[in-house]
Amino acid sequence: MEPKIKWVANHMPKSEDKNLQVMSLENVAKARAFHKSFPQYSVTPLADLDGMAKRLGLGGLYVKDESYRFGLNAFKVLGGSFAMARYIAEQTGRDVSDCDFDYLTSDQLEKDFGHATFFTATDGNHGRGVAWAAHRLHQNAVVHMPKGSTKTRFDNIAKEGAKVTIEELNYDDCVRLAAKEADETEHGVIVQDTAWDGYTKIPSWIMQGYGTMANEAADQLRQLEVNRPTHVFVQAGVGSLASAMVGFFTNLFPSNPPKFVIMEAEAADCLYQGAVAADGDPRIVGGDLQTIMAGLACGEPNTIGWDILRNHADAFVSCPDWVSAKGMRMLAAPVKGDPAVTSGESGAVGMGVISTIMCDPAYAELRDTLELGPDSQVLLFSTEGDTDPVRYRQIVWNGAWQSEKDE
Image (cartoon, rainbow, N blue to C red; front, side, top):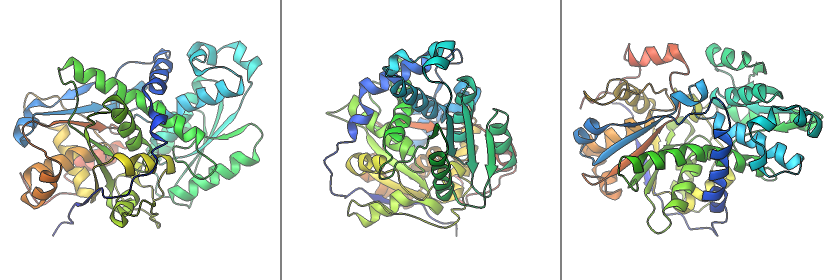
């Protein structure tokens, strides 16, 4: 028997919700204006899977395809680059709207700011984004990767000129190492998309950077005459991306927000565990966190993100690896007439979840709880392309991590 998807509706007590304003429309607009100043910027596609929506019994199904982001095959660069800009803005006494790409690559910046070394821990995409942005902005980067990281992901970071290592540590311990080294380095800065006590400013800036993706998607949906998605499914590692999407759409539709479904890898389902406990406190999952969803293998929640999710998420879902593998295959070969999406292990879990909920009677209760049906307009985020090409082919071509049920 294949392992089941586990889920829980959100019954946590609400907090004062003071972190929702991190994702205010004004903050996100600044992030998008900053990203637009890069010569490499273009809006990533929103795949309209009309045939798949009909097949699954939905009104619409839309997939934001981040495999096109800045030529980096993943969304993460949005966060790291904007956090660097806001950090430099703060250090030079400017507003971030005056710190566009031209200024950040100018001789004037040398005089105003000089150089910093940006430290980070990553399972691949975030570190590559930080290294890429540091390289473009003539800054230094040091990147630590957890054990089990693949050579492809390592090489992609190294070729951006960063100093990169694979450590005998899990992701959360790599974060602690990077923070310690930044602390001990002159002009050292830790750029991490998870917050902890005393470290909240940079993670909140990273979340705002992710807001560019949500902002684009909202515009693209309107062009398709979908004023508001009814459901937003978003995957979570530490929860920074998830809470950024939830925060943005809650601020965009304050009187009628979409329903939000938060999906995690079963091996690292700290947010789900917190929702099961239902007391409002975050939970931590330890150990090696082995999952094909490398980008989601994080066991300690971002405290800012957790606060937004406990107040606004509707359901938390814990996903075995087959769910993501199934999603990858469905997006690669969708219903005839729909555009194909190259989606990696951490990008495709939403497709696996929505198709299972809609087609497997075992999840009828979840389907009813979320009120999913022919009027639903569902938004998913494919947050990475084939960032690990060998693994991608194993799954999509060779059928690795198969699910037993055939629709």
